[in-house]
Amino acid sequence: MNPTGPVDERRASDDLVRAIALTTQFGDRIVLDGVDVAIRRGEVFVVMGPSGCGKTTLLRHLCGLLPPTIGSVSVAGHDLYSASPELLHHLRLRTGMSFQGGALLGSLSVLENVALPLRENTDLPEAVILATARMKLDMVGLLHAAHLLPSSLSGGMKKRAAIARAIALDPDIVYFDEPSAGLDPITAAEVDNVITKLNKVFGITMVVVTHDLPSAHAIADRIVVLLDGKVAALGERDRVWHDPNPRLRDFIERRLRAEDSRGMDVIQHLEA
Image (cartoon, rainbow, N blue to C red; front, top):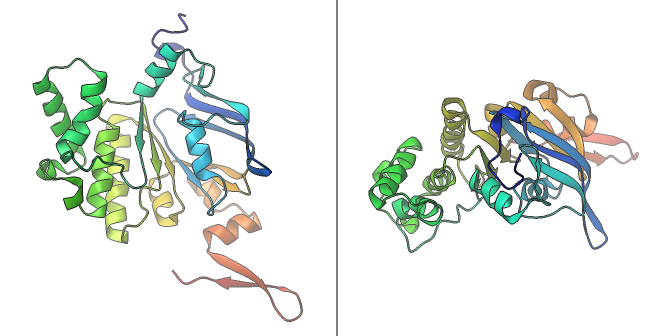
Protein backbone atom coordinates (compact mmCIF):
# COMPACT_ATOMS: atom_id res chain seq x y z
CA MET A 1 0.00 0.00 0.00
CA ASN A 2 1.19 3.50 -0.75
CA PRO A 3 1.93 4.98 2.71
CA THR A 4 0.88 8.45 1.62
CA GLY A 5 -2.23 7.43 -0.31
CA PRO A 6 -5.84 6.95 0.79
CA VAL A 7 -6.51 4.45 3.53
CA ASP A 8 -7.77 1.10 2.19
CA GLU A 9 -10.97 0.52 4.14
CA ARG A 10 -11.12 -3.15 3.13
CA ARG A 11 -7.83 -3.88 4.89
CA ALA A 12 -8.60 -1.95 8.06
CA SER A 13 -9.70 -3.82 11.19
CA ASP A 14 -12.85 -3.16 13.15
CA ASP A 15 -10.77 -0.90 15.40
CA LEU A 16 -10.71 2.50 13.76
CA VAL A 17 -8.47 4.01 16.46
CA ARG A 18 -6.03 2.24 18.76
CA ALA A 19 -4.00 3.81 21.55
CA ILE A 20 -1.26 1.70 23.12
CA ALA A 21 0.59 2.40 26.39
CA LEU A 22 -0.16 6.12 26.32
CA THR A 23 1.82 7.94 28.98
CA THR A 24 1.79 11.71 29.27
CA GLN A 25 3.97 13.71 31.60
CA PHE A 26 4.05 17.48 32.12
CA GLY A 27 7.02 18.30 34.31
CA ASP A 28 6.79 16.05 37.36
CA ARG A 29 3.09 15.36 36.85
CA ILE A 30 1.99 12.16 35.13
CA VAL A 31 -1.41 12.81 33.54
CA LEU A 32 -1.85 9.48 31.73
CA ASP A 33 -0.10 6.31 32.83
CA GLY A 34 -0.03 3.41 30.36
CA VAL A 35 -3.50 3.85 28.85
CA ASP A 36 -4.67 1.33 26.22
CA VAL A 37 -7.94 1.87 24.33
CA ALA A 38 -9.42 0.68 21.05
CA ILE A 39 -12.33 2.44 19.36
CA ARG A 40 -14.45 0.37 17.01
CA ARG A 41 -15.94 1.56 13.76
CA GLY A 42 -19.49 2.83 14.08
CA GLU A 43 -19.71 2.91 17.88
CA VAL A 44 -20.29 5.67 20.41
CA PHE A 45 -17.27 5.45 22.71
CA VAL A 46 -17.50 7.50 25.90
CA VAL A 47 -14.55 8.63 28.00
CA MET A 48 -15.56 9.29 31.61
CA GLY A 49 -13.90 10.18 34.86
CA PRO A 50 -13.59 12.95 37.46
CA SER A 51 -12.01 16.30 36.71
CA GLY A 52 -8.24 16.07 36.29
CA CYS A 53 -8.21 12.35 35.46
CA GLY A 54 -6.77 12.87 31.95
CA LYS A 55 -9.93 12.72 29.79
CA THR A 56 -9.17 15.79 27.66
CA THR A 57 -5.50 14.88 27.36
CA LEU A 58 -6.51 11.45 26.02
CA LEU A 59 -8.87 13.13 23.54
CA ARG A 60 -6.07 15.40 22.30
CA HIS A 61 -3.83 12.38 21.75
CA LEU A 62 -6.50 10.44 19.87
CA CYS A 63 -7.39 13.24 17.46
CA GLY A 64 -3.79 14.18 16.66
CA LEU A 65 -3.45 17.43 18.58
CA LEU A 66 -0.88 16.31 21.15
CA PRO A 67 1.83 13.63 20.87
CA PRO A 68 2.08 11.44 23.98
CA THR A 69 5.28 11.30 25.97
CA ILE A 70 5.32 7.51 25.48
CA GLY A 71 3.05 5.25 23.45
CA SER A 72 1.36 5.28 20.06
CA VAL A 73 -1.95 6.17 18.40
CA SER A 74 -3.01 4.55 15.15
CA VAL A 75 -5.94 5.49 12.92
CA ALA A 76 -7.13 2.90 10.39
CA GLY A 77 -3.84 1.09 10.92
CA HIS A 78 -1.60 4.13 10.43
CA ASP A 79 0.54 5.58 13.23
CA LEU A 80 -0.77 9.08 13.72
CA TYR A 81 2.44 10.63 15.01
CA SER A 82 4.85 9.11 12.50
CA ALA A 83 2.64 9.60 9.43
CA SER A 84 3.87 11.61 6.47
CA PRO A 85 2.43 15.14 6.15
CA GLU A 86 0.29 13.97 3.23
CA LEU A 87 -1.20 11.01 5.11
CA LEU A 88 -1.67 13.07 8.26
CA HIS A 89 -3.60 15.67 6.26
CA HIS A 90 -5.74 12.90 4.76
CA LEU A 91 -6.51 11.42 8.18
CA ARG A 92 -7.39 14.81 9.61
CA LEU A 93 -9.86 15.44 6.79
CA ARG A 94 -11.62 12.25 7.91
CA THR A 95 -11.85 13.53 11.48
CA GLY A 96 -14.36 15.98 12.95
CA MET A 97 -14.02 17.87 16.23
CA SER A 98 -16.75 19.49 18.32
CA PHE A 99 -15.16 21.71 20.96
CA GLN A 100 -16.67 22.30 24.38
CA GLY A 101 -17.49 25.96 23.75
CA GLY A 102 -18.39 25.43 20.12
CA ALA A 103 -15.45 27.51 18.84
CA LEU A 104 -17.66 29.12 16.19
CA LEU A 105 -16.30 32.18 14.37
CA GLY A 106 -18.30 35.11 15.68
CA SER A 107 -18.07 37.19 12.52
CA LEU A 108 -19.58 34.48 10.33
CA SER A 109 -23.18 33.30 10.18
CA VAL A 110 -24.03 29.79 11.27
CA LEU A 111 -24.25 28.75 7.61
CA GLU A 112 -20.84 30.27 6.82
CA ASN A 113 -19.29 28.54 9.84
CA VAL A 114 -20.46 25.17 8.54
CA ALA A 115 -19.43 25.98 4.97
CA LEU A 116 -15.89 27.00 6.01
CA PRO A 117 -14.34 23.48 6.11
CA LEU A 118 -15.80 22.78 2.67
CA ARG A 119 -14.35 26.00 1.25
CA GLU A 120 -10.93 25.35 2.77
CA ASN A 121 -10.61 21.69 1.87
CA THR A 122 -12.59 21.04 -1.33
CA ASP A 123 -12.93 22.40 -4.85
CA LEU A 124 -16.71 22.15 -4.84
CA PRO A 125 -18.73 24.88 -6.57
CA GLU A 126 -20.12 27.53 -4.24
CA ALA A 127 -23.70 26.40 -4.81
CA VAL A 128 -22.80 22.85 -3.77
CA ILE A 129 -20.92 24.10 -0.69
CA LEU A 130 -23.92 26.12 0.49
CA ALA A 131 -26.35 23.29 -0.26
CA THR A 132 -24.17 20.86 1.69
CA ALA A 133 -23.87 23.27 4.63
CA ARG A 134 -27.65 23.68 4.72
CA MET A 135 -28.06 19.90 4.66
CA LYS A 136 -25.71 19.52 7.64
CA LEU A 137 -27.63 22.17 9.57
CA ASP A 138 -30.87 20.40 8.77
CA MET A 139 -29.41 17.17 10.13
CA VAL A 140 -28.89 18.81 13.54
CA GLY A 141 -32.17 20.73 13.48
CA LEU A 142 -30.69 24.18 12.88
CA LEU A 143 -31.61 25.05 9.32
CA HIS A 144 -33.91 27.80 10.59
CA ALA A 145 -30.89 29.51 12.23
CA ALA A 146 -28.60 29.44 9.18
CA HIS A 147 -28.54 33.24 8.81
CA LEU A 148 -27.88 33.99 12.50
CA LEU A 149 -24.56 34.94 14.06
CA PRO A 150 -23.24 32.73 16.87
CA SER A 151 -23.90 35.51 19.39
CA SER A 152 -27.63 35.08 18.73
CA LEU A 153 -27.64 31.37 19.53
CA SER A 154 -28.48 29.66 22.79
CA GLY A 155 -25.94 27.33 24.36
CA GLY A 156 -27.60 24.24 22.94
CA MET A 157 -27.85 25.77 19.47
CA LYS A 158 -24.13 26.59 19.53
CA LYS A 159 -23.36 22.97 20.40
CA ARG A 160 -25.50 21.72 17.51
CA ALA A 161 -23.95 24.24 15.10
CA ALA A 162 -20.52 23.00 16.13
CA ILE A 163 -21.63 19.43 15.41
CA ALA A 164 -22.89 20.46 11.97
CA ARG A 165 -19.49 21.98 11.21
CA ALA A 166 -17.71 18.88 12.56
CA ILE A 167 -19.58 16.66 10.08
CA ALA A 168 -19.28 19.05 7.11
CA LEU A 169 -16.66 16.88 5.37
CA ASP A 170 -18.45 13.58 6.08
CA PRO A 171 -15.82 12.33 8.54
CA ASP A 172 -15.42 8.74 9.68
CA ILE A 173 -15.04 9.82 13.31
CA VAL A 174 -16.07 12.84 15.38
CA TYR A 175 -14.59 13.78 18.76
CA PHE A 176 -16.67 15.66 21.33
CA ASP A 177 -15.26 17.51 24.33
CA GLU A 178 -17.96 17.77 27.02
CA PRO A 179 -20.90 18.27 24.60
CA SER A 180 -23.46 18.67 27.41
CA ALA A 181 -21.36 20.99 29.62
CA GLY A 182 -23.26 24.08 30.73
CA LEU A 183 -26.61 22.88 29.37
CA ASP A 184 -29.85 22.27 31.23
CA PRO A 185 -31.04 18.63 31.27
CA ILE A 186 -33.58 19.07 28.45
CA THR A 187 -31.11 20.81 26.15
CA ALA A 188 -28.41 18.27 27.01
CA ALA A 189 -30.83 15.50 26.01
CA GLU A 190 -31.40 17.24 22.66
CA VAL A 191 -27.65 17.23 22.00
CA ASP A 192 -27.48 13.57 23.05
CA ASN A 193 -30.23 12.79 20.54
CA VAL A 194 -28.29 14.50 17.74
CA ILE A 195 -25.16 12.47 18.54
CA THR A 196 -27.15 9.22 18.66
CA LYS A 197 -29.00 9.97 15.42
CA LEU A 198 -25.83 10.77 13.48
CA ASN A 199 -24.24 7.59 14.78
CA LYS A 200 -27.18 5.30 14.04
CA VAL A 201 -28.28 6.79 10.72
CA PHE A 202 -24.91 7.59 9.15
CA GLY A 203 -22.59 5.19 10.98
CA ILE A 204 -20.23 7.93 12.15
CA THR A 205 -17.94 6.79 14.95
CA MET A 206 -18.32 9.07 17.97
CA VAL A 207 -15.83 9.60 20.79
CA VAL A 208 -17.37 11.62 23.61
CA VAL A 209 -15.51 12.98 26.64
CA THR A 210 -17.94 13.74 29.45
CA HIS A 211 -18.47 13.66 33.19
CA ASP A 212 -22.26 13.94 32.66
CA LEU A 213 -23.44 10.54 33.90
CA PRO A 214 -27.00 10.61 32.47
CA SER A 215 -25.63 11.67 29.08
CA ALA A 216 -22.97 8.95 29.10
CA HIS A 217 -25.51 6.26 29.95
CA ALA A 218 -27.92 7.50 27.26
CA ILE A 219 -25.49 7.51 24.33
CA ALA A 220 -22.66 5.06 25.02
CA ASP A 221 -22.09 1.72 23.36
CA ARG A 222 -18.83 1.29 25.27
CA ILE A 223 -17.20 3.29 28.04
CA VAL A 224 -13.71 3.80 29.40
CA VAL A 225 -13.38 5.28 32.88
CA LEU A 226 -10.13 6.98 33.83
CA LEU A 227 -9.07 7.35 37.45
CA ASP A 228 -5.73 8.96 38.33
CA GLY A 229 -4.61 8.72 34.71
CA LYS A 230 -5.19 4.97 34.45
CA VAL A 231 -7.96 2.84 32.97
CA ALA A 232 -10.24 1.83 35.84
CA ALA A 233 -12.85 0.16 33.62
CA LEU A 234 -13.36 -0.47 29.92
CA GLY A 235 -16.14 -2.28 28.14
CA GLU A 236 -19.80 -2.36 27.21
CA ARG A 237 -21.86 0.36 28.89
CA ASP A 238 -23.90 -1.83 31.23
CA ARG A 239 -20.89 -3.86 32.33
CA VAL A 240 -18.96 -0.73 33.25
CA TRP A 241 -22.01 0.77 34.92
CA HIS A 242 -22.22 -2.17 37.32
CA ASP A 243 -18.49 -2.70 37.85
CA PRO A 244 -17.91 -3.49 41.57
CA ASN A 245 -14.69 -1.43 41.85
CA PRO A 246 -15.36 0.73 44.96
CA ARG A 247 -13.85 3.88 43.48
CA LEU A 248 -15.83 3.40 40.30
CA ARG A 249 -19.00 2.91 42.35
CA ASP A 250 -18.23 6.16 44.21
CA PHE A 251 -17.98 8.01 40.90
CA ILE A 252 -21.06 6.53 39.22
CA GLU A 253 -23.25 6.71 42.33
CA ARG A 254 -21.91 10.17 43.25
CA ARG A 255 -20.73 9.05 46.67
CA LEU A 256 -18.41 11.17 48.80
CA ARG A 257 -16.18 9.39 51.27
CA ALA A 258 -15.28 11.07 54.54
CA GLU A 259 -13.95 9.96 57.92
CA ASP A 260 -16.03 9.98 61.11
CA SER A 261 -14.67 10.76 64.57
CA ARG A 262 -13.28 7.21 64.84
CA GLY A 263 -11.35 7.51 61.56
CA MET A 264 -13.77 5.16 59.79
CA ASP A 265 -14.98 5.69 56.23
CA VAL A 266 -18.43 7.23 55.94
CA ILE A 267 -20.14 7.34 52.55
CA GLN A 268 -22.32 10.34 51.77
CA HIS A 269 -24.57 10.36 48.70
CA LEU A 270 -24.44 13.71 46.95
CA GLU A 271 -27.69 15.38 46.00
CA ALA A 272 -28.43 15.36 42.26
